[in-house]
Length: 534
Ligand code: NA7
Image (cartoon, rainbow, N blue to C red; front, side, top):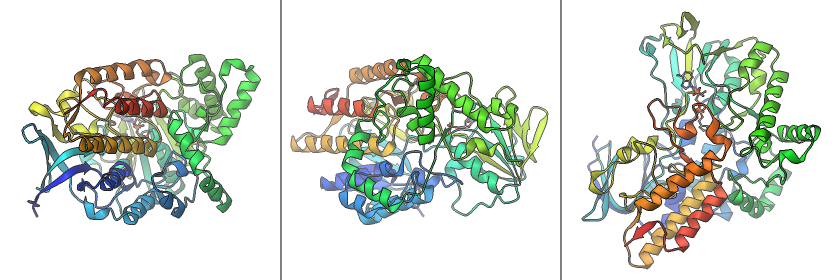
């Protein structure tokens, strides 16, 4: 059934995940009329689609949440240190109900195009379902990791078994009991999938191209005492998270590696390893991401842990990353990940030098070898940062599209605006920080809300990034990332290197979420420096 509505709003937001929902709330507070357009039948974004076994947050649950409402924080209890996908989704559904959001969300609707008209200074959004919506402010909150990437292996059509993509996992339960399962990929997603699938599958074969430095998650159930203590300290927790480089409620370690003798270094690293999660990186030494020697010591520490955990020495060596530093790729959090390779029903296949050549009728083909499987799970990542945006037909002034504009990598100012795209504000757009996402989102949403309010209060109706500011932001981003180990990874999706043909460019601002917030506020305080407002 075609939806031939033509409706007008102050703002159209794309996506009802963490970003779109939060934006809706902010704009309503300002009294704007808003329509949120969402492809799924429910809110949740990432947490709606990524229902694969083992999916959970890698941020501690109490900071993987909204901070805008004291009541909401009082009402909600997290049950574990790292929330499971069902719990993260339940939270977002609760928020949608609590703030009566669904009445402004159009579900099961996918945006096809968003076109700016200079004469009317309006955006026209069309959907695949045939609807047309005009608005002044176009706000994509379409996600930084929302368009799954699946390699184009030949032969998949002939595969006799079932296959799944983790980022688009079916709502119905997938029963893997007694099946021979192949998992392709060993990124943050696969690292969550593998230990859970291993528990029920008859046989699990993992195809690894690049090994990762997997940090132990050390998840636990929160006790009532812990929950009360978190609640009592929320102001401090959020203040810490807003200042932290990656948006976590962690304080700097206050020390660097070279100030300590080797035995002390190992003791401190051991403490971080025991603390679990990203605390190994952020609470041990402050120079792991910027000093090659410090990083090398921490990287070797992780390799030695892998060697100690994994019984078979050949498998252990295969699991050890050797040709790039810790944090050169996004480090996954594991929940008994390395231990899983000690199970009799789990095997690891190195496809770095011998790539997967095809999917056959019976399984995965690597050169002349065939690995039989009843089920193949593609945990092969996302077209990160820009993918969701360039796959919509977004046209700015003069008909230029985001896709054309970003052919050689994204160009934005503050990751929020793009020159030639007036009144478009991106949430979690490329060139914003990659960090604990809700913290980054809330900062962006507040900034966008203030910008719109400021336009309105001053009788203005257009804001647009300047080309000069856009180039400067791009240079700034490149300079920062080159001073860190993040630029020394292999096929890192931080740089678009995981998708064949995608331009190599930093998709994120790695100067720290706290610094980023300051840069955004400085622009606003300086009459929206870097933007033309008229
Ligand atoms: P990632 O981190 O991009 O992982 C994808 C994995 O798939 C990675 O191990 C890839 O190996 C592997 N891959 C991709 N293409 C192939 C081919 N052709 N052959 C073999 N292996 C392949 O995605 P995730 O979903 O795990 O994580 C993304 C983020 O989402 C995560 O960090 C969280 O922030 C949420 P490669 O490393 O490219 O050699």
